[in-house]
View 1: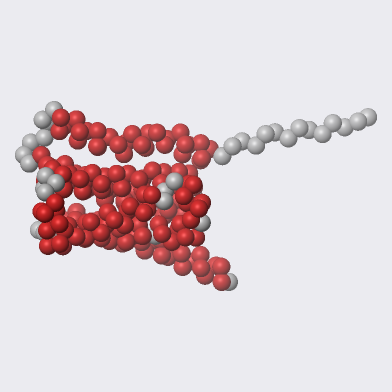
View 2: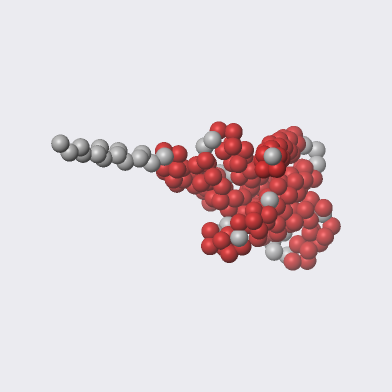
Length: 215
């Protein structure tokens, strides 16, 4: 009498990565929706008051908000075990650059009307513009090195080291916001507190990992 080995049941694929990929278009639309709304409102004269200033402020706020989402990915993934959250990190980072670039172009193109003399004077004489430009310039190499092909050429260690500059952007961008508003400092301070908390969580985690490795 021969025994027939039972055919092992196929392993179910983890649901997490599938959820991450399935929701990616939804997250993209959610992140792009504010830009679409601002464009629609601008073209249909739905904005009241100083229109340029409104979209300038809104795009800057959207850049900071996207930055907060980006920096929250790793702590949330570590706290919840939802590794699929990492699926959104690159997209979120690129939206930071997208909204920061819109913010800058609106200021230079619509507010200063591409008057290069005024642009250089603004960068040189207004500290909040100077630090805002520094923030954008730091974002440029981060955006350029986002594609997987470039990340592989850089190597994992160098890529991670470069992208830690995201935390520096959090400091410089929030300082830009604080200096720009001058008196109404509530939201800039909220962002400062949020970024400080996210950085603290990250540092604690890195310290624990280093201690475990040494032991």
